[in-house]
Image (tube, rainbow over all chains, first blue to last red):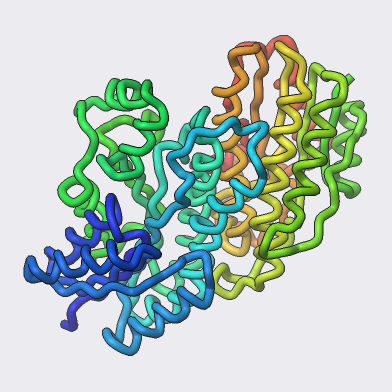
Length: 251
Length: 211
């Protein structure tokens, strides 16, 4: 069988990097998509140095032409695409806001990266993924289940992603394309930034996790995404796995 | 008196009549990928929030409920109007509503949402619905400190459903109507008997339970 090929957005660091490393450890070809070129190149180089097969492709997921170009590059170079992981989120994700007075333009950034990005990945990637009977994994969050007082726009789009996951599973199932979600709670750059911006947040977050720690992106989150992308999950679609140490009380 | 903030259309007028509410319309916006309408929406929010407080507000920022093409084949204008713009209108309408709401008052969002079994061909609508109900949960956390409650009611009453449902709802009459099945639930959530409820989503789904 040919080597499995996956494309991961927002993979220049944090959870995306962990997913990429985990998939590479399985012997898969990993395409690192990100806006940050030097960081993305560094992730790909680190994976290759560890014996894996990784390539970087500059990708602004909110821009259709950018996604189209990357998918074409993957088709030309790898000849197949078995999995797409949409992990990229707005740079505003961790920034606390007063929701009722926030600029509407700030909501736009969340929507463009997370949701227009999902549309672009669907439009440009679906046919190639369908040829492999592959799957999509969308990253959501416990914020998308229970809401957040200070991160309401982020929680809104992550809730919207849950709706996408369930509906797309029904739409694409007859084409043998699976769609699932993962809601991670990980020790990531975004989480560190959120803790910096809201000093009480760290104790709030850690206090509600039964396992008493944040997840490691490569060791705790990546394998869950890898499972959903793999043949072991070939009968799993439309679901979201919480990889959060038990934090979220709604599943 | 109850205030209804809603889109234009006969369905919203039926909701208004059932609630015996006064109706304030949301602004009409042209589609634009760059969100040039954001400033107009923000100006509307500010002017609405500045009006005299109201105890009970219902929001129905309804858009199209027609069947959609498969998500990967969706046209750009439909995405911009039914997806991005609808989310922004809902978010802005709810922000204006809770700011306008008096202390210890109540807001109810009435949201179009298909059951998961019927959600193929309604992917954008479901995306918006799940975003909105989760925003309601966030706002409940934000506004609870001044006694303001906010809940959501979801309904498939306006949605174009398949002629043959994959599985019938347990209760006869699915998906029901706004006047007969949704309005009484909204009344209940606005009433004194619901003062301990906030951040909840009530699916008027005739037992066809969605996750």
